[in-house]
Amino acid sequence: MAISKERKNEVVALLKDWAARSEAMYITQFTGLNMKQIDDLRHRVRQCGGEFHVVKNTLARIAFKEAGFSLEESFLNGSTAIAFAFQDPPALAKVLYEFNRTNPALVVKGGYLKQQILSAENVQALSELPPLPIMRGQLLGTILAPASQLARILAEPGRQIAAVLKAYSEKENQAVASPA
Image 1 (cartoon, rainbow, N blue to C red):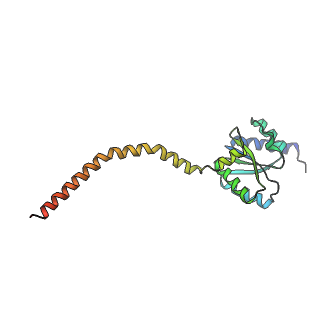
Image 2 (image 1 turned 120 degrees about the vertical axis):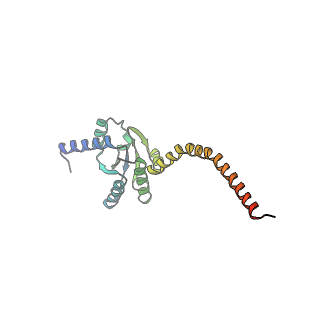
Image 3 (image 1 turned 135 degrees about the vertical axis):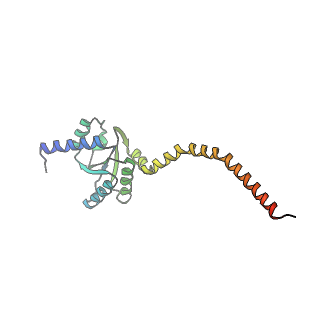
């Protein structure tokens, strides 16, 4: 069914807005998925702060060109759906690849991280990164490691003195308790 020119302009504006607001976009082919599977995927994508939409290739080309994205033509062939990551790009990539394990009809063609083009292999590598909270914890641990080592080094002489005083105290208590 043909859509009106006004509706096409609305869709292009919406795609441009999503592209501008998203941290990453993953372009997929979904030939062979039924509506129940697509709805399940949309639900999973929303849970990680994203959106998943089936798009017309011509409207996506127009929107990407107007939004200033360099266009990879192979991305917009066949049935196309775009997953927009508004919060955590690796989490959304992980959702797509986990869904792909049970539904191989979903194929990730590639994507964009901000304005940079990603191949399907890059998207898969992104999906293998740990979640954002874990990465933040690892980074914080790395940053704090030298400070905690310094604190241990500075505390060590005091601990050694305390151990010597304790040993001396215990030796005197034994000497007082057992007069020969």
